[in-house]
Structures are given as C-alpha cells and as structure tokens.
Amino acid sequence: MPGTDGPAVIRSTLRQQIADALRDEILGGRLEPGQEFTVKEIAEQYGVSATPVREALVNLAAQGLLDADQHRGYRVHEHSLADYRGMLEARGLVADGIFRDLLRKGTPLGPKGPEEASAALLSVRRRGEEAARAACAGDLNVLIGYDLRFWRELSALFGNPYLSDFLHRIRVQSWVCAVTYLRRAVERGDGDLRGALWARHIELVDALTHRDPEAAHRIIDEYNAHSLALIERLAAAA
Image 1 (tube, rainbow, N blue to C red):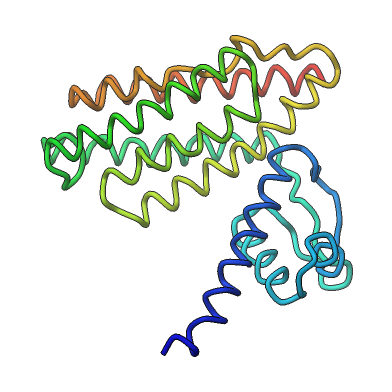
Image 2 (cartoon, one colour):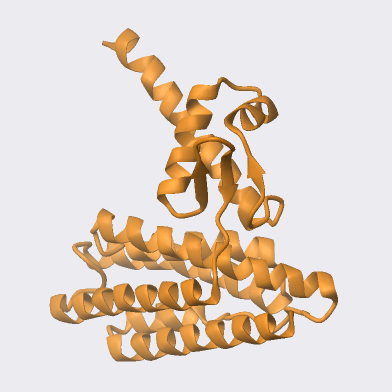
C-alpha cells in the first residue's frame, strides 16, 4: 500500500542524500582526515532528524570513509600510502576480471545487443571526454565527478551490479585517499595538477570497443602505476 511504503522510501532517500553530501564533503576536502563530528552536529547542519543522519554515517563507516567512536561520534578515516597501494591492487584485479569476461563472451559488452552496447559506450565516452578534459586542466573537483561516473557507467555495462558496486566503492575510497595528498600539494603551491593527472579514458573505451582486453589491461596497469608514482612523490614532498 502506498501509505505503508511512503515514509520508508522517503527516509531511505534522505539517508542516501546525506551520505552522498558527506562523501562529497570528504572528496572536496571540506571534511579532512581525522576531523570529528557527531550525529547531532550533522543533523543540525542539514536541518534533518537524527535517524537518517545516523543511518548515513553507518553507511559511510561501512564503506571505510568514516571511523565510529561510541563516545565521540565519528571522524573521517585517515588512509595511509599502504592503503592506497592496496586499493590500486584491488582495482586492478577487478578490472582484469572484467576484461577476461569480455574476452570470454566475445560480445561488445556484457549481455547487451550491438546497438544498445554502442549507445551505452557512446555515453561512457562522453563521460570520459569530460574527465580527460578536467584532468588535463588540473580541475580536481570536476575530474572526480566525471571519473566516478565514467567508471560507474562502464562497469555497469557488464551486467553485474555487485561487481559494479564494489568497483565504485573502491574507486571512491582511492579518490578519498588520493585527494588528501593532491589538495595539500596545491595548497603548498608545489602541486600544479595540469597535465599531471591520468587522462586516458578514451583510449580505454576504444580498447573495449575493439574487444581488446590485453590493450585495456595495459592501460589500467599504466594508470595504476602513474597514480601510485604521483601520490608517492607528493607524499615524499609533504
């Protein structure tokens, strides 16, 4: 009955909106690693009740973005370089699985027909073009948004929502870890990001369009090596 389901749906949507807003605050550097806050503070900030806020914070803690403290509330998780290396390894393993599946099926992408897959890839390509443009310009905020959408749409094409959700979560975590070093470098004045960020999204789309998982694998390997070298260099300069 509509009257039964309505409040639950509204609460769930509000919880997700709060979780998304807080995730963006972390990615944007407005909530910094180690920063503490309570359910009450977030509820007052967004003008909502404590229940959806508490649910949102539990969700973000489960994703590894927050640490819970029963007595003091929550704080933004502080990731290490070792964490970042592990995230890149996990991303690479998932990508390898995707590309092997592509090779095994021998289809454009997942269960989609040629026309549907072509249209979907065109949408992914547009996201990739915007992400690459932002990367070349060093516009971190725009890049993160388009990059996450790019990978979310790309992984969804393979028809496995569990795989897509896992990859999205690990990519959010890796961005949360990376932006700490990237933003601090910019603040110090020694981190001009123009041309320093990975911008080969379209090459990856082309490799998948041509059913070339080996080329896609090489691109991802180079991407992870590039990302790790950049963050290690910035960490060493801090």
